[in-house]
Amino acid sequence: MPATEGAPALSSVPSGAPPTGYRISILPAALEISARLATAEELQNLVKILQANAAIWGTVAKHEAT
Image (cartoon, rainbow, N blue to C red; front, side):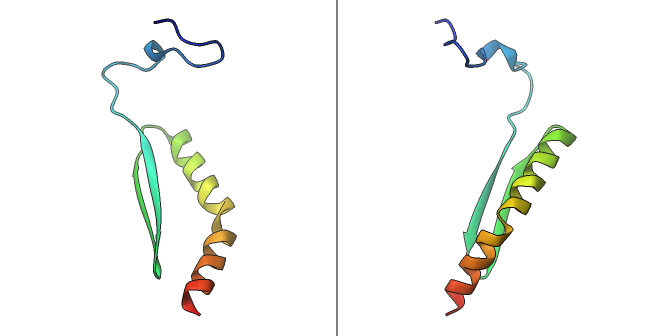
């Protein structure tokens, strides 16, 4: 099946490469982060996401405390 226009082809990911990604969970009084990153660039992207959402998590923590 051919890749759709604009979408990366599945063959662009090396077949032997481990999967990468992350999961962020907001728990009562805690932030849980699980990540499997293969490059420094992926780490930098995760840090940017965490920094961009810091205000949201601060609001959630304050709301849960009341």
